[in-house]
Length: 126
Image (tube, rainbow, N blue to C red; front, side):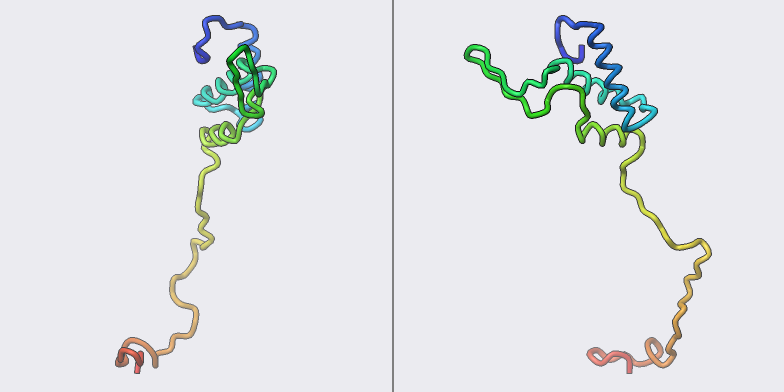
């Protein structure tokens, strides 16, 4: 159904799906339930172009496929999708401040400068 072909070789399709699952598990193990789209994409590429044909001419028709468009492999997008589905690969923030940190200043406070004095624009605190 995924490939839209009238006839599918069941044993071959099952083998490619098993191999696609094994390949996807090299990135994320165990595979999330939503990884079926990536598995089908990987197996589908190998099913329709097992010999990695990149250019084909039959009579007046010619077809050119991108390099490496056949066989069983994971693209960068496949790997990113698997990591995202597993909850990995996103941005995060690390706060290095310890819980016991005191927000009060640790430098000497100059009471002779700043608020409490007269502020003159262009001159500052005087």
